[in-house]
Length: 615
Image (cartoon, rainbow, N blue to C red; front, side):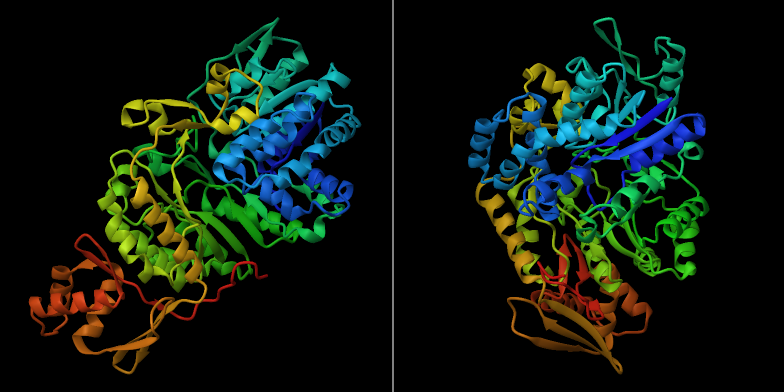
């Protein structure tokens, strides 16, 4: 059997498709006689745009539409005209949508005229392999491009079997995709390591796949959806991906000079925190929350193999949360290797300074710690299991260990109040030397999140997000099962409180690049050099118990706790004198206050930063 695996726009062009890499190994392992080929449509789309636009539409434009506009559906819209055989389909609705939200759409509109010709060229390339089975993987904005190509493939080669899978096919989304698109033969819902080979066996035998859990298939003209399973794929059955065909495609690509490639690896699936406390806004993991992780030794062996094979040192892990055992059995191996790896990791925000140090020593350069807020009450509403003080400490330790930290400041939670944000916003100017969020964003309602599954949490009214009106030509009842994002009534802060928060975050972002707040030891004294945006340059000198107190506050403590520690260390200071001094240092912006807890804000060592647009 000839199996052809396809990934379409808008997969990031600097990354191989982990899904294709895994399925390639799965099929070869389960069916060594099958021929497995791949089509990297995202890379081909960037090439196609560059060539056919005469260089006007470049890889940077691909990123602007495919990544930056993900919450407006622009990438899907580009291909909806090809799917519906109407170059002008949805344009008026898109323009109306964009005008109401001040969304820039010119780049997407410039791409739309090339979509139909690109789909035709893709079909020619895919069919040149004479595939028996064509498997599409779809996540986020890959649905419409994939459907457009699948429709054209069915028209040209009806005998090929078309299969969809990926995150866009989880749960009811997969059944809705199947029943609304008859040219899709099968949809694999959930993890594919067991289901896809089982489907291929049925195709070989010509039998109905009634026993493949979660699979959608056609019983005559009726779309059948097999019951989903609670069984998850064991870590031992998750292979190391094969990226050889991606590497060959990239090496031959004219956009290669525009791309800084990274490898993608997977150490764990699910979320160990979500198993106990599912963050209320998070829809990630869908129907497979159960946490599973490969042993650290095996993960390192996979990375070692891939790096040696592809000569690429940037490694992105797609785990939703790091396995805490990796601080013992994986990250030390990376550090001991001596390789100049650059790792990218998602972690929980309440890591200790020691754990962040291990990340830095391992070559981790970029983390996503899920900070989300700096206010403890709002974090409680999210069920994050962390405090605002701890999140500020994490931001500071990222500076200390040269870790780039990506995070979003989220708001709009049912039950939040303006007074939850006032003390945080008042202190944001003092944090300008720490890495700012990408922005302040009102949360959206995501399928599979507790906010979605339990309307009593505050979002009782919901409908498919408005952006899908310019993406799909389907009734709202079908969209309600097909899509991931939903519009609902706003909750939480609004009006002046919301504006004050967004303005303060914008000011933080604007002032960050040239701001510093640095510790320096000078004999027995502790110096703090303040070079933060919006403040006059100053150097503060602390000695004796005051220097010791400031160091103790690096871990985040209450005034009574600091007093007990100072007394135990032999320092003589009254509780009142300490409390008065803490207020003075807080007024200088050297401390962050979260309720009764104070956190020291200065960092150690001069950070290296690039201003926006540099590099």
